[in-house]
Structure formats: structure tokens, C-alpha cells
Amino acid sequence: MANIRRWSPFRDMMAMQSAMDRVFDEMRNRWEDSESGWGYNLALDIDEDNDAYLVTTDLPGVNPDDIDVRFENGVLTINAEVDERTTEGDGSKSLVRERRWGRFSRSIRLPQNINVENVNATYKNGVLTLSLPKSEESKPRQIEVKSVKQLEG
Image 1: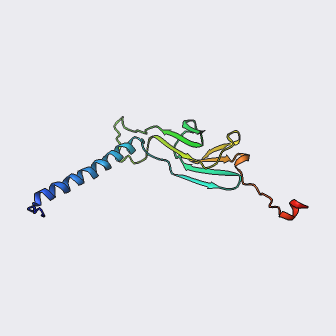
Image 2 (image 1 turned 135 degrees about the horizontal axis):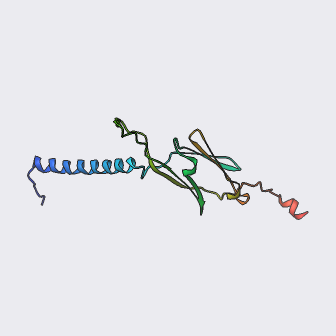
Image 3 (image 1 turned 180 degrees about the horizontal axis):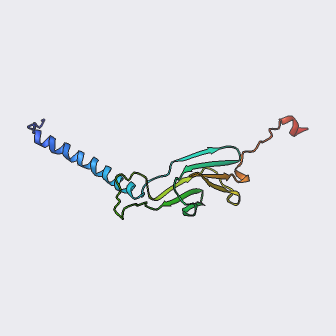
């Protein structure tokens, strides 16, 4: 037997209000995280050829001494920090604060082993570029195919 339930516009409105509250709470949490830089993932470009990976990321305004690059257990991790820039004081105040500050981090697993002894990291004009050479054992190799005649003869 089917249950019949009386329609209540208030019940539906309360359910909609609850759903909207959850959406805005999630957006607020993300905004608060990004305000201090926490939770902000660096955007990476990763290119590959037979010999190496080339990783590029933008880190404008970062002091090179505040960039930490690590490679451990197949995972590349880039950490950077930008100090908050304030101009307030002496009668001045900030009107708009949109540039990011705080800690920035990104970790990514690379599919092949890296020759960590020959990694090269450069930082120029706010762009960090990493050249990560592949280890010799992970590079592709040509395998000679022998015919049965060659093996018998």
C-alpha cells in the first residue's frame, strides 16, 4: 500500500536552504584556505621525452631561497612560500588584496625513476623549471628480434 504524504512547501524550502548552506560552507572553507595560501595547488606543466621530464610552474614574487624541491620514493614535491605584502601604516591602507601569499605546495608521482644526481632546477622571471633526467634503467631500449633460422644456424 502506498503512503500518501501531504505536500509541504515549507519542508521543501527547508531542504533547499540546507543544501544551499552546505554549498556556501564548502565555498567559504575553500576561500579561507586560499586566503592564506593553504590548499592552493601549484599549476604544473609536465613534458616528457625519451631522456627526461621537464616540469614548469609559475611562482611570481617568490624568493628562490623560499623554494623547496624534493624527490622521494617516486614523488616530486615543490613547496614555496610568499610573505604577505602589506602597505598599511603611516596613513595608508589597502583597498584591494588579490595577490596570493602564504605557502604553496604540489606533489606528483612520476611514472619512471629519476636520476636525482643530475636534476637541474632554474628560476627565472618567476618561473621555476625542473629538468628531471630519467634513470638509465627506465629509458626505452630497442630489443633485437631474432628469427628461428638465426638461432638454429
